[in-house]
Length: 376
Ligand code: PLP
Image 1 (cartoon, helix red, strand yellow):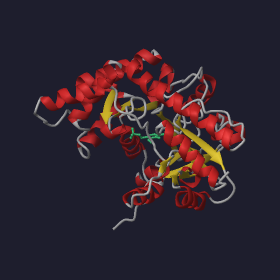
Image 2 (tube, helix red, strand yellow; image 1 turned 120 degrees about the vertical axis):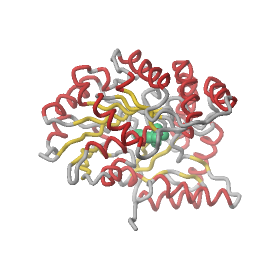
Image 3 (cartoon, rainbow, N blue to C red; image 1 turned 90 degrees about the vertical axis):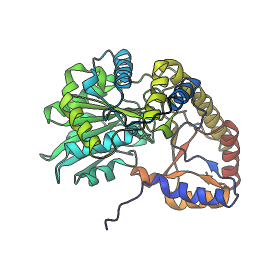
Image 4 (tube, rainbow, N blue to C red; image 1 turned 90 degrees about the horizontal axis):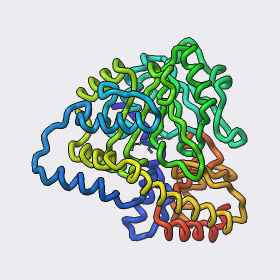
């Protein structure tokens, strides 16, 4: 039997689930998605799907009308031109990344990952028998790294670069120039860029999201990963998308045909409901998360006498702490009944990740509970 590592976000959340079973209220700063009722456009589409009373297999690559709606959504936002054949519906963005790595990596080949990274990337690379090559970033450089620094980590075995923009856990957003430099580096070194853009709509104030899809000259080496989980607040429905060169998408569909058979039909219809009214559905989630972000940072700064600038995107704040992050998380859970995620899960010790995507009263009460244990 192989012994696989469970996702790092799972350890504290399992402990929190156990405490909840025992009747203890746990403040949820460990969420990975907007804690929000689904927008009516999603619910109505899902109800209509159930009323059809039949649940046959969906097409492996996804319903054609959903692929078209997803491609239109991308093409409209970024002036690109993805066709249906360059678009596949996946069981969440996560499966798109997993499948792409399975296809792109041979044994021992390398994938560059910028740290702090989304928890699953290194393990996914290992599951594809590849080697994760971690390139660190720091708070001083706004959690970003320039193409020049990435270049120093490339070898003749590097095949893939995973770029997470906007970044979980830091909220870092890359500028047009920074992305252009990274894509140019990828071209020079013949790399495929997996651009994980699952927070593309969760961007606040006047911050601007730039997609790798808006560089047509690099289309042949870019795979865009998108998702309904965060952008439309429908994580449990498990609908994501991958957009990329036809050959890679065809392979991805083949892998899907030998593994998941695609995602659930009712979920795809629910996603179609979200995409039919994409701007409004996304604004519903974004506006709720904006209110929670503002409340989180106002309360955090007031209670802990800090002056932390609110993040410009995603649902998270990556907070510096003294000492070991897993010990801190266990202690916070035990003493303040609040669940957070340790920085080590994201490849960086000395930090904790707060999610501010819970209901507003939970955010305030949870921070007050942390204040009582003198955590910061
Ligand atoms: N990528 C990032 C950066 C994420 O944070 C997540 C979820 O937390 C995913 C991908 C996967 O999302 P899903 O599979 O729900 O679309």
